[in-house]
Image (cartoon, rainbow, N blue to C red; front, top):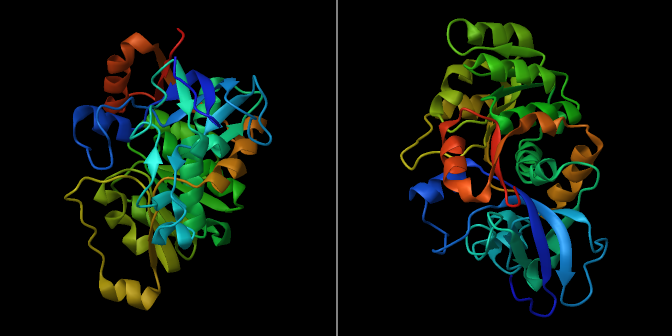
Length: 325
C-alpha cells in the first residue's frame, strides 16, 4: 500500500490498458525517458479511496477517475509555448512514476489535478480516455475541424478513435484504410463513410471519394506506407498528421516541391494535454464515442506478461489488465 505524503491521493486501480509503448518498454526496445525499474501502465482508471489532505476541486471520495499521465515542469520552452505534453522535464505514470499495472497507485501532490471524473461507464472505458485525448491532440494540431475530407490509415483502436473524432469535429467525408476485414467493419461503426483495403485502385477510389483531395491524412499506424501511396490524394493545403510511433530508422520521403507548391502542412503529434482529457471525457461518458467496442481482452494482474504479448501481437483491440480479477 503506497504511503501518502501531504497533498497525495490514493487510487484503487480498476482497469489498466496497454499500448504499443508499454510493449516496447517491456521488450527493451524503448528505454529513453524511462526510469528502471518501473511499473508499466499510463492508460488507467480507478476509484479515489484515500487522500492526505483535501481532494482536488471537482473530485470526491469514491469517484471513478481517469488519470492524465503527465506531470510537467511548467518552466521549459515547451511548457512556456503551450506544448506541455512534450515537456523536456516531464514525468509520467508508467515511465518514472508507478503506473496502472498495480492494485493501488499513489498520485503525488504535483499530479493531483490530473484526476478527471468519468461516471457512468466501465473502468476500462474510462481508461481509454488517454488514447482518445492523444487522438484529439493530433486532430487539433492538424486543424481537423476545418477539413471537409479526412483519411485515416490504420484502423486499430487509435485509428478507429480518429475516425469517430473526425466526425465529431464535423468532417463531412471520412475514409479509412486497413488490410483487416474486421477492423474495416469497425471503422464503419465509428463513422467512416468509405472503408478500403490497401493496394490496387485504393488511391483512385480515394480521389473519386474526396472530390478535390484529402484535407487531413492521419498516419495511425507506424509505417511509412501509411502515407506514400496516398500523396497523390492530398488536397491543396492538406495536413498530414504523423501520429503513430515509428521505428528509429523510419524516414519520410516527400517531395519538397510538392510540399512547397501545394502548401501541405506536415505536423507531428505526441501524447496529449490535460485540457484534451477534459474535452473528451464527456464524449466517452455520454457514449458519443462507442469506446466499449474498442475494449479487448482483459486479463488478471498475474497474467500481465500474457497481456503484453497479446497487445504486441496486434490480434486484439485494447488489451488490458484487471488488477482485481
